[in-house]
Amino acid sequence: MTLPSDGGLCSKDAITLAALLRRREVSARELIAAHIDRVMAVDPVVNAIVTRCFDTAMVKAAAADEALVRGEEPGLLHGLPVAHKDLVETAGVRTTYGSRLFADNVPDHDAVVVSRMAAAGAISLGKTNTPEFGAGSHTVNEVFGATRNPYDTSRSAGGSSGGSAAALAARMICLADGSDLGGSLRNPASFCNVVGLRPSPGRVPKWPASDVLDTMSVIGPMARTVGDVALLLAAISGPDPRVPLALDAPPPAVTDPALIRDGLLRDVTGLRVAWSADLGLPVDPAVREIVTAARQVLVELGCEVIDAMPDLSGADEVFRTWRAFRFATNYGPLLAAHGDKVGANVTWNVGRGLELTMADLSRATVLGDRLASQVSEFFETVDAFACPAVQVVPFDVGLDWVHEIDGVAQHNYLDWMASAYLISATGLPALSVPAGFSPAGLPVGLQLVGRRRGDWPLLALAHAFESATGYGSVPPERVT
Image (cartoon, rainbow, N blue to C red):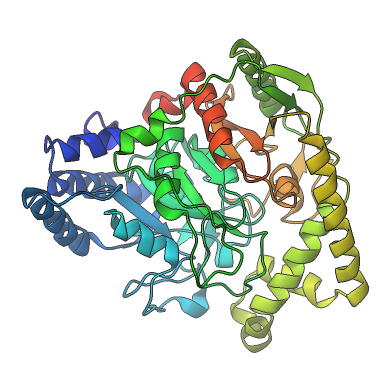
């Protein structure tokens, strides 16, 4: 099915909309109403925004307009329509985590990312779909069903932030939060032709948290443009006294959204970018072809591109061990008490966690330390690393996960996500930026990885790539 086009407000990026709101060329009421109409028109097919807060959103839009009339200084996200992933708590709004066990759960508090977006003036339209407890890069659960890809509604939107990515791609919202353990911001961004940033651990404080020492799972921004991702990152980053490992670096001291984008306009000439078409993994030929073309774009931007990749030995074991350990910690008690109501992915991953020994955890700790040294040494001589964000194009929405890539069997729901989760294990900032379309019109993203805590230089490189290609500006209705 082809989605209807939208040539009006919903097609504009967040920074452009912010300028229109500030100049009072459009009201927050008009903007939110337009996006609500868009949700009503396309979401019955896409199934991205699964819990809706339309009445509350219109009340907040009226308050935002009145604040401008009074001459109050608008927040960085003043009046902008957003949505929150159904893994983050929202006070007074159903938060299911994609689980039947929490189908009627209504928290009494906001996650810090939700409260920061609201404090900056964003207006939430609701919650976006996610697989059960975020387990897997395919957004489907027994509470709401599957989210479909706006570029081909017979295909997956990816995951676990698939509802966020699909809502952005279908022009229902202009900004969304997401989370990323093994690729949950980058995978759906690649599948849905949007931008998803996995920030440096601690850049965006994660509260509440089940493990304050966890640096593998992060909260981050999604949007249709790199500039909009930077805008949302500015609003949600910065230290929090409740989060021990939050980075002390404050967000940019900027009140004009346009200045956020202007700050990304850097000359990337001479940047040394390492490049790999496959990370040594099986990759769909269509993805390989698009990533190879992206290499030439970086060359034409003036980057020095070399064929090289960091030593990621140990990364697979580090990721799988700590992921399994935290699944057993977080969901083991639920599985023990309600095993018949817990899905296959969570059950499998909890099982792997319960099999771990002290020797396994000790080995993962040593390997993690070695991995950090390996990637730090690699980035002493390069500024960034480019590779596939996902090894495949969007797959059939009816599949549980990818079972084969270019003739190579994938044995569990994690295997096919390795191009993303190996990078997660490094602790480096990484993003997916639109890089082109397969012959069937399916989106493919380029993964760019930055130096440790180098989120803003990474965004500048991605902005240059985005400006040179323009793939992200191609909406679903123009793709055949």
